[in-house]
Length: 153
Image (cartoon, rainbow, N blue to C red; front, side, top):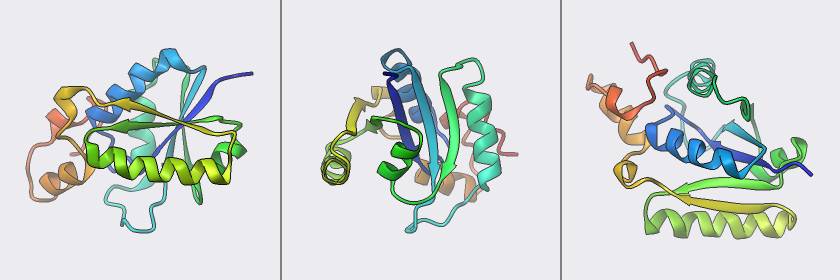
């Protein structure tokens, strides 16, 4: 059986923290699907088409990494793509508490799907898409926070 993981998020935009987690997870799975989901509590800043393009370009040299948009529950999307793992990055203890709750709910809904946590590399612990968007919105330079493939001009 193939080890397929889904790495869900809004990736609005993808950051170097996301990129690091995904690259470090590649040896663990046969396929990683970066799943760009709609979060009903967030309004998108960058259009979906741009986010798809940036992620595809970021991982173009990694055939095990795919990118797909999705709606609805992450565990339902996992079932659709035959994934048995959900990959999540953890920056802080607050992230752990939040992700643990979601992971436990997902386990109740679909017991055959495991959540796997990877710690964020220390140099990216401070980094999140919300901060990057805010800096960008106010004209700041965010190039140091996003993969080289992300062209925000």
